[in-house]
Image (cartoon, rainbow, N blue to C red):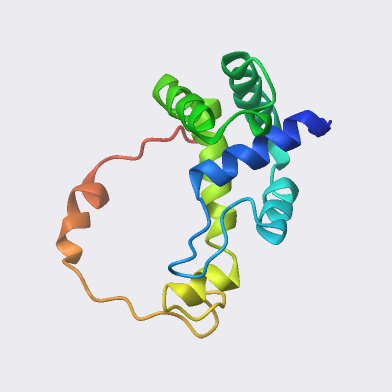
Length: 144
């Protein structure tokens, strides 16, 4: 099961509305070829939710999203976001996760584009006593 060509076109247009490119910061939008390919390859088990969100988008738009004027696209995306729900949240999460995996985006944020390990990142020590209530509560699972 995969997305149809029309779903892909609408998804790409929606991704550009979620994270548009920025000439000021010279970073791509979520509809960039590399980023969007990563988004499509990362759908996995979330595909049904993404298809559901795109079906809601198609119903609201009444036409392919990319064929509509920019102002109407923004209006439709805003309406979709206000409608909310799990499918919209899943679609947005996938776009954001894949966007921030891109090296160009990480460099624009002043971060080294690498995995957090094995080099690791410095984490300031916090107040470990905040975990005491969690540690002291009884187990929340059933014994086997």
